[in-house]
Amino acid sequence: MIIKKDILDWGALAMSELKLKDALDALKTSGVRITPQRHAILKYLISTESHPTADVIYKSLESDFPNMSVATVYNNLRVFRNSGLIKELTYGDASSRFDFVTHDHYHIICDECGTIVDFHHPGLEEVEHLASHVTGFKVNSHRLEVYGTCPSCASRAVTGN
Amino acid sequence: MIIKKDILDWGALAMSELKLKDALDALKTSGVRITPQRHAILKYLISTESHPTADVIYKSLESDFPNMSVATVYNNLRVFRNSGLIKELTYGDASSRFDFVTHDHYHIICDECGTIVDFHHPGLEEVEHLASHVTGFKVNSHRLEVYGTCPSCASRAVTGN
DNA sequence: TCTTTCTTTATAATCATTATAATTAGTTTA
DNA sequence: TAAACTAATTATAATGATTATAAAGAAAGA
Image 1 (cartoon, rainbow over the protein chains, first blue to last red):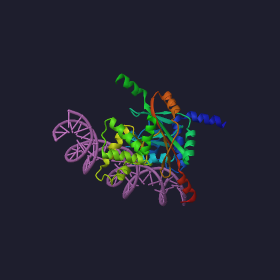
Image 2: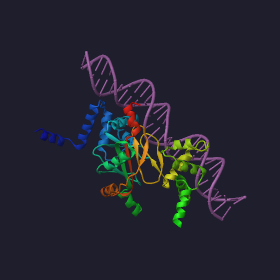
Image 3: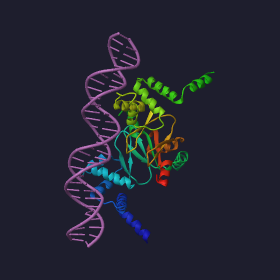
Image 4: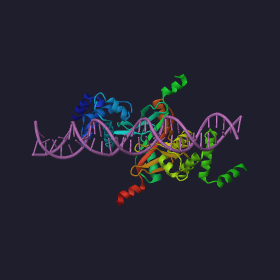
């Protein structure tokens, strides 16, 4: 019973470990060497709920890799981005943020404190079709973000804290 | 006949001059001084079809304002952005681009050559509602961009030029 | 016109990101 | 397993966009 075996194997690994294993396999298949640094960066990106900057990643791994260069973080983030494992989120004011790609989801961002929260929504194929029709482009992808005020900032505005 | 008079007045000014006049009035009303540099930067943003970077604006006005500082461009772009006259477009790789706000529109961007083309589409209120409902945010706005290959790059790919 | 305040200018500083060159370490193959 | 090939890491310097600073200049109101 192959299916049962698969289920058992899945159960034996935590979800994040599975994602990590898949990501490492994907890299290896495309000829990218697996170094301890790459392993650690990927693991960090998968385990965190936040959307860290390169510098945050660098500082978070400092204790495990005291000699790691910040260039290594940037280099590997680019490698992961090029292989589609992570997404780079760019906003005007600050540095890029990086997000491990799991299911398709969008982001809603607090104008006050910058908090980024994921939300799921069906893809906007209709918008892509219209854009393609009007402009003659061949559409590859789209980017959508919603901006607003998070509950915490909203309550702070009311209570004055 | 007020309406007729309005139509005549509108006809007497080119569309871009009208936008410029409105923008200057809006600034003046909110207590922002109109300097020759601000006038020129706004005029440039309104007249251009492209989505220029701060440096492009700076260089384009160099002949008219040989002594203008690049800081002036940045300062005023921030003033215009804060008063809602222009939008800042941020992408990962390069510097910010600036776009005079007219009607609501979105951008489609060529992955090959970076060309930015406007297209119009009804606002995505439904997405905003869902995001608000799921996350508890008070929604202010959203950002949407479509990516693809422009007709020119697509034909170049075929013809080999 | 005089004064106040804002804006511009010139320059230096900052900060994220990338390039470089030497060293180190995966991976392959014998 | 060990040599050999090649890619990755490190340390550092460089780049490039954007912002901060302080002095000089110009708009708006009394």
